[in-house]
Image 1 (cartoon, rainbow, N blue to C red):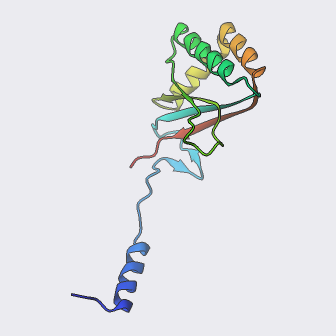
Image 2 (image 1 turned 90 degrees about the vertical axis):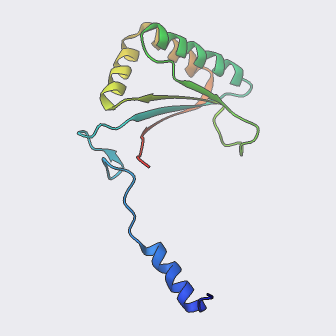
Image 3 (image 1 turned 180 degrees about the vertical axis):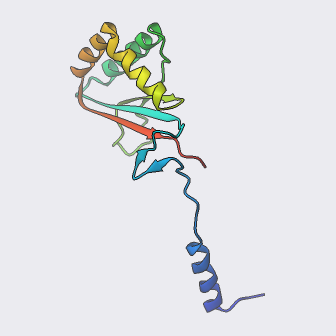
Length: 140
């Protein structure tokens, strides 16, 4: 059965206007509700100084090795892929935490490690721009 154009457009508009449940439970105004147990993702982006991308990658690998040596998860390292649009960082690192408390404990362990701080100091000499992003994982 073919619907008249006006009916079709009305149905399409009605579909778009249906209320959708928010997939971001536990988030208010872009911040984490501290009582909610949500998984946290920390992602760091390193934009290397000219011709230093390989050194940034090596230093990020060293940082992950230090993390392992102090009892923290290594996380994942990503490198720029030629299929991107060129705006990507040369190197990115990401780690997922069970909740806010787990990330805070991770931050404290990093801050207490002289070896990790040494890696940070060396890394700062290799990049022109650094970004740290922290996300809560939204439910589907």
